[in-house]
Length: 181
Image (cartoon, rainbow, N blue to C red; front, top):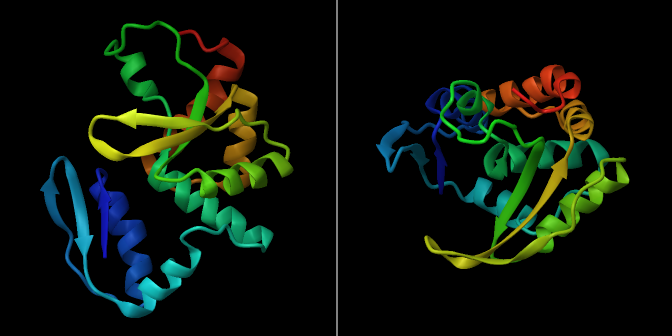
């Protein structure tokens, strides 16, 4: 099994700590292509993850945890810090977060369904989109607007440190600033 992550601290302080609780000890490797990674073999964890790979749990608390992990790993959020320090040409930060999945839209449909049933309006699922670096088609959906993003953040409570800061920015600054710098 391999877990890749650009943020070494999050890999060490979140992912690795959870693996350690399962008795898995492995060093952080890398960087490799701007990512750090964990590489190990564990049949027990493999079986647990294999069971969940295409299914969102039915229990509402487990659903939140599942969506938190999914978004922390595969979600997207504008790099507000790049807008603020002038690295982006646009002067307006798009108030949106996204969910992305390669291969099949089935898991995204389930995640979107949970969010919509929790009162968070989401776009329809786009795709299949062709990406030059990946042979599998990409599917995605978005949550637009500072208010909806704040509701998502409050409900799911993401843990990725960089994404948490971006979500906090949306909740505090964007709702009153109309997304302009």
